[in-house]
Image (cartoon, rainbow, N blue to C red):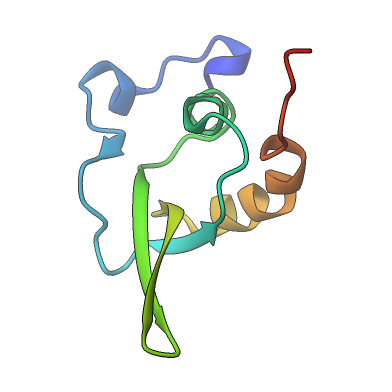
Amino acid sequence: MLKYGEVNPLNVWGLRQLEHCPPHFVKVNFDLQCNFKKITDWVVENLEGRFYAGDSYSEDNQRIQMHKCVAFEIPGEASYFALILDKLNTYESIF
């Protein structure tokens, strides 16, 4: 983990964050309330597996809705992220 000064080879080679979401990744969908970079920075700093961060679309009552999605190759990391998400995804006022 970057947090403890350990070098992750996936980070070094630029293979950690994927541009597409493979079907075997575990998805965590949510409505964004903060800066998305804050969430991806937390994932890079605190977790070690490959992940996807981007948009996810779902259909509900003939309407298409867009959510943010972070998907993980390691299922345990998805659980950890889902537990901490309500602390990360908070609106921060500058006033």
